[in-house]
Image (cartoon, rainbow, N blue to C red; front, side):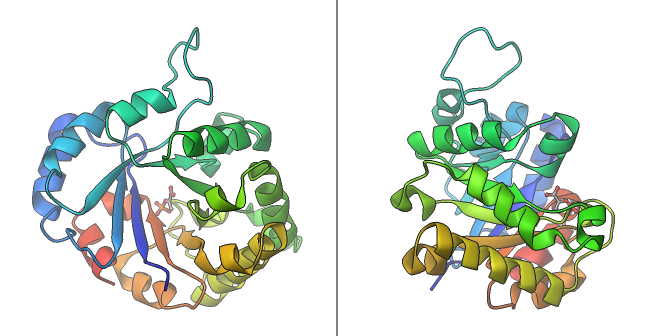
Length: 247
Ligand code: PEP
């Protein structure tokens, strides 16, 4: 039985004061041990969020990392730095990183391998643009991304990865994929994992849906057989996140 995961992606939002304010409102309501609740927050907020969620079941994650160990990479953050803050999860390959910061699958693969080498769980994002969906390319895009992003990832490590299917046209747009559109791609994603690894990995890997998930649609989406929870952007910045975790 796969444990459901509800992960927040705060993106470039919330100062330290605002994070404390939000956490104080929500933390007791999302301190649930039947689901994995992960808050992926800006680097600057990690320490405070760890402190604020001490003695709870809430996990803290980062939104990115750099694949090199250390050195002259001004502005970047290494996996050891994240580990020393107690970070357990990291979002890798978010479409905003792919599109705005030109991250390609080769870099994403290096980041995945680096995170796994430090026992930080990658939340690996994949997804298609609207144009690709309209050209019927969704499934081949997902297959292409995952096959490249998972190069040299062992079977044992693959089980630790959380995959987030995030159609780019649904992120931050208010346009959610229907639960059957989301299920179709998540089911296919599981098949790709079976092809790349085996049945055991495909049955155990957690696959999330992300893209304008709200309290009003979360229950229907999370109820689908191949969807093990969600990656939540905008709605994780308010108390609405409580209802999504409970959905
Ligand atoms: C995201 O950024 O991962 C995301 C799913 O955003 P939103 O929920 O705002 O669409």
